[in-house]
Length: 143
Image 1 (tube, rainbow, N blue to C red):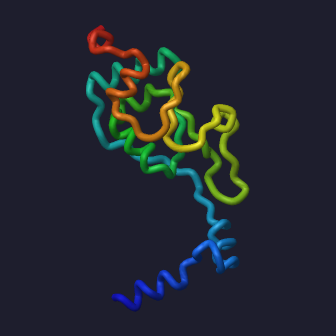
Image 2 (tube, rainbow, N blue to C red):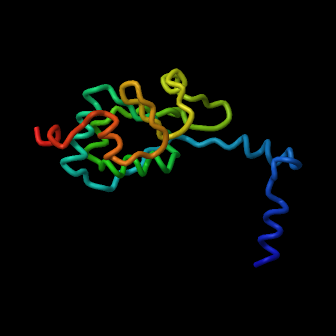
Image 3 (tube, helix red, strand yellow):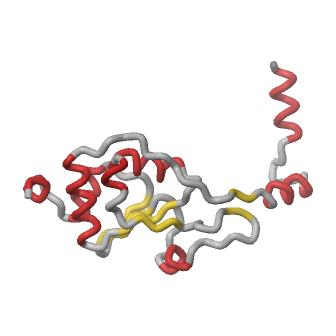
């Protein structure tokens, strides 16, 4: 196994020498695909999603982003349908594919990115943190 590992690292483009391999890696494209949300939403998550939608909060993400999928799984399949989700690569990702204008206009640099009122939250967030950032309370969930 030591020889295999050594060979792999010797041939993998390091960014310093193997220009052809680096250029080949830049040719990779990903066609857009939908991910399946397998978790069930809690009543609290549904209420939070409704609140976020009502105040104009947006989640910016990418179909290939594992953290975006995990964020959606936290909400569950019912609540995710309520959220204002913006797919930043609706045409796919890779050479010649650009980020959606709505995402570049919002200066999205990583995924997921939440814009809630005047706050920008980068990365996967706990639902409680989204609730706090948006002014959502337990009382709101009971209405």
